[in-house]
Image (cartoon, rainbow, N blue to C red):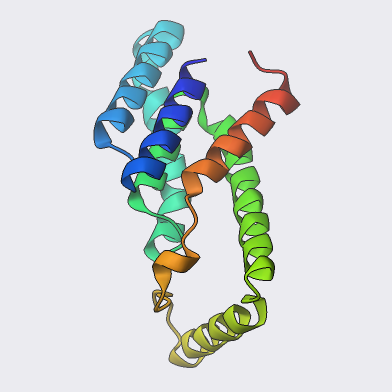
Length: 166
């Protein structure tokens, strides 16, 4: 229930202010720390570090290429602190699928699919010929931006239902 409250609050603030507040992230990590120390005693600190570090590593790569925002990375770390990194791996996959489906539907609806695929293919070509990964930064980013927190919430709810948690 704590994690669901964290996620709903994060989505609300992201949609209303375009950011996930650091205070919310800290609260999530402190909550996760309390849970880990309660369950594992002194070893809870190591478990907490593992729960935070693994999602950071996986999400940081996506952040560096411009796929998600820093708040999304930190929110995934806070959620992982509460529910554990093994569960968060599934949620990462589900949220990526939700984001992809949302983007696909939005591109089809706005009749931008072929145009955007062409832009992205050109970007990939530049990366391949330059032999390095460049930040993908479309000119009209605010039009193509997805609130990944919403995708994370959907993925978390799906995970809760699928795993029978709560």
